[in-house]
Amino acid sequence: MSAATSAAPTAGGTLKLVDDEESAQGARLVIAVLANDTAAKVAGGEHKPLTSVLEESEYELTVDSEPGHGSVEVNGVTVQYTPEAGYSGEDEFVYRVEPKDPGTAGGTAVVRITVTAPSPTPTPTPAPTRTKRTTPPAVSYQNCDAARAAGAAPVYQGDPGYGSHLDRDGDGVGCEPYSGGSGSGSGSGGSTGGGGGSTSYENCSAARAAGAAPVHRGDPGYGRHLDRDGDGVGCEG
Image (cartoon, rainbow, N blue to C red):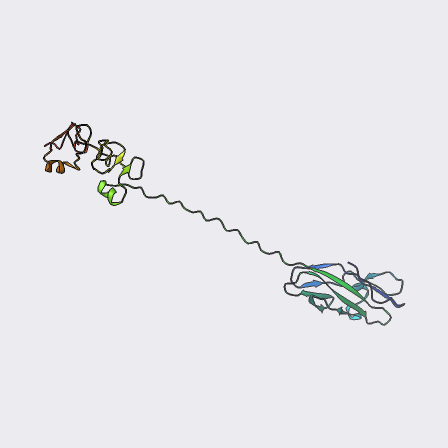
């Protein structure tokens, strides 16, 4: 940036004030405003750094125009600029150098400042929480009473809890009810062959109570659930 003097030089001497753009990170900024200013003792003379031509006691440094979005304070040969809280953008102020020698003209210069807001701290991305898969407990029934109590009977092969100890006749259906039917064997698991197929015994106790024990293969009511050893005779002995 550049700044021009506010007054024409006199015969006694001149000041040339130029200040570069500065930037602040949302905090106090100390600017050596005189670091690149020059002065000449006589009109038309060679300009040299102001601080080498004039002693600090030979001039006065003041703020001529306050910044619009902050405050400034003169401290020796520097000016401290503090932006307003939360402000970011352009700002400027004007300072004046007034030599105490009336034969040397003073001048003003503009300092333009870019206030940059601090970069926000990135928020870390939380790691995704892995959901543990719970394996359902294995289903098993100790016997058909347990399967029926659980409402799972009849238990088909491939169903949870199916086991050969529940499927005595090996037809792929465990704990099927022993009831009369058409002789297909799907109702009682027994009652095959013979005449009628309408007779069925839930167990040997029922067969004995009916006076039908032992029940031979082909007899009404015969079923594999009564013939545990598979010799063709159920409820023997």
